[in-house]
Length: 243
Image 1 (cartoon, rainbow, N blue to C red):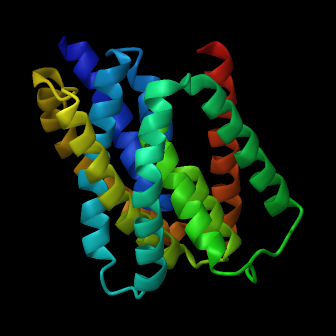
Image 2: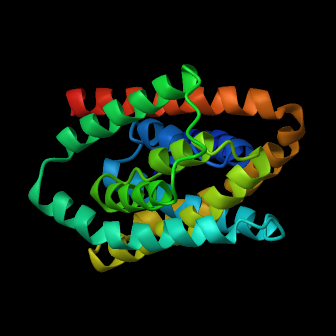
Image 3: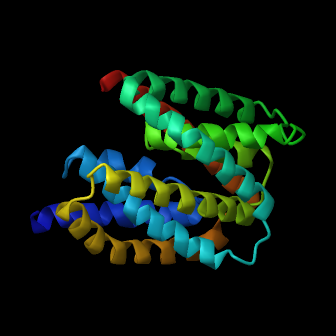
């Protein structure tokens, strides 16, 4: 890898880390589509997962005092049941139709949010269903965030609780995804080297993103989350069309 390639990836990791620290999600959404201009797709996906795992675990520790244990446990347990099915889909089906469905579902969620539908009174099975879907998507498409983001946004979680839950769940799911990559032989020397170089840059992004949280109030936070969800849905649809 040339110095120019690493400088570009470092800048991408910095921006993605800042966004994830600020909102609790978005690292993969931002980093992978940009990293593939400089490295191949498998290297980009595995590297992004590795760096994001470290980032989320740090922010999990930072938010350890926030009480969000019950919903975190529900989401992790239900996601574990979904991951084997997602792996089966990955092996047996084309990923593009699944990404198209994901994009359409996310767009429906954005529409409901914009129209002001109040989903806070949905029963607890809604939490489990979103966790299950996140598990399926985690191994099928490496995109586990949208169902969890939609759920917490629908439940009107405060920004602090929103980030705390996401970081706890993402840490577990990303770690398990890394194990899957390891046993599948997807972690090579290029991934290890690139991750080792990118993680220090990630620390800088997380630090500045954490400091920037005070500049965004709760209403602005919710509006920006909807905007990021829209970008996620659009990205998934375009990715399914363009391959």
